[in-house]
Image 1: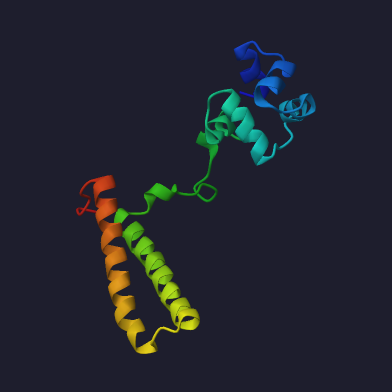
Image 2: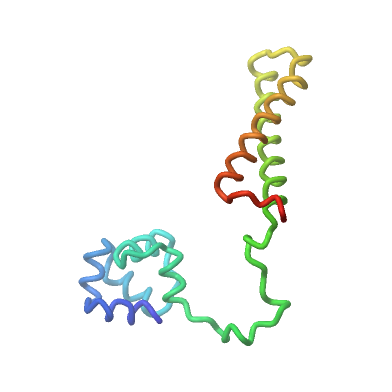
Length: 146
């Protein structure tokens, strides 16, 4: 379904959609012709139709080939296919890097004693990783069986 079809479903003219979205008539015309809209345009149009930008893109973009024709080489797995355990490892590693970077900056600019950095780093990384694990466990439920 294109943007024009979505607009006509609401019974709006291009001018009405432009007024509702705060965009120009010309921007609406370009978007309906299939020109790639900017992120701000997509956000404004999505808000006009009471949709998220992703939902709007899904509705107005037409696939080049049917989904049943997709070959395994061209399809990519969704991000959700990463096991929760690995998501936690990646998140903990990123948090650890952030904590250690913060400690290095404190040593460089605040004059912290370099001998304290390993101890403070281990404590900071441990606390951060523990909080992340606890938060993810509450958000996703117990998934220790993965």
